[in-house]
Length: 259
Image (cartoon, rainbow, N blue to C red; front, top):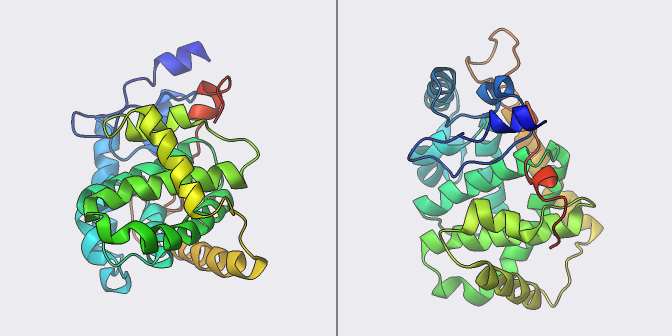
């Protein structure tokens, strides 16, 4: 797929997230991305914002004040619903704007890694549980805008535990952490966060079921909304749910790497 890969290397605008190298066609990109520079993608961004402002009732979101100003960074409507649910399950009292952007970018990254909606719910269920311990120990020393990198690191740990086929840490660093810290520092942070959990990454059946249920409910609620129109609009390919148009990110790019 060299031709397809070459056609998808430039995905972001100057203020968008760093480009991700994908093995999908450029036709699919207009569906998958809400922050690209093409005319079609710009229209998609406006459609998402229109849905957010007029059809998503923001007062039903616990973290509406934090999420709404940065909702354009969400790759689909489902990411907004899931981010709100994830933050609530994590027990965080607040989160800064930069951390919200990074959380949306991390959800998009998982989406581009071709993980299903169920996979992502399971990953977030585990990560939200890990966050409780991390916040109790370190939360008092973290600024709201630092929280996002801790959350993204916990999501990496959760995905490494939950998934049989994982994306190596150096790929996560390349796309999510490269401007924040060196890979060596990120690796040390992963080890430290697992130490806080005493390397116990498994959730009880009851705890996992409760958290998965909440996240799956949020995902189901988001499925009523579609990019490009409100409830009741004509069916199309651009569903608001997180499973709409999945592409491959690092699992092809990272096939030769390890954790």
